[in-house]
Image (cartoon, rainbow, N blue to C red):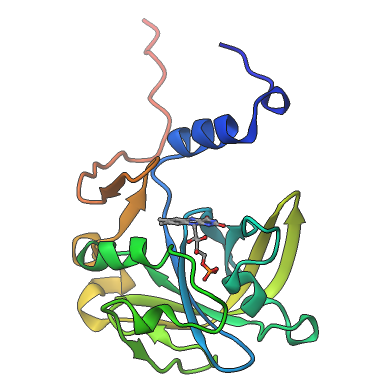
Length: 210
Ligand SMILES: Cc1cc2nc3c(=O)[nH]c(=O)nc-3n(C[C@H](O)[C@H](O)[C@H](O)COP(=O)(O)O)c2cc1C
């Protein structure tokens, strides 16, 4: 089937996208409103941007009424009504249910931390706290928010990194089994990251000419 995405209704486009771009890592973003309320929400339009500087992106749609989601409101720079800072925590198997629970919309000014079984720990450089249970946390400052139609791609620079000692193995490698990251598939499906295999880099040798 050959498809022109512009001829599809957005929900079909969405289904084809989230069923094909799999698995997606999940940013579990804690942010702070200017009034000091901590917000927590998952975003699977999420990935690394680069490591010089260390930068991450996630992309946010609008609320059904067209307004900004609470996270986007908070991560906007101070000049645009936000606080310009946030923490990207990981989504891991041991609190997968809490990740999904935090996708439930709450009125601005209410904190997901008051409802889910997760706790905060103070960040070192930014104001919003990290999720205490997350084995890795990236403290970020908003570098740029790029509008892409009805989405806003938030690019942030990591200004501090928390890595729990037990997930760090020799030579600064993260132990994937101890990390226990989960990924998002389509719909309500998630995946574990335990099924892995190795492929060495390099082209195959050319066939020998006799
Ligand atoms: C696993 C998962 C991934 C999600 N990914 C995104 C995403 O990439 N972008 C988005 O706008 N919403 C995403 N959502 C929905 C938001 O989490 C949801 O709209 C949430 O209420 C936003 O919270 P906020 O208004 O507190 O920022 C996702 C939900 C789940 C459960």
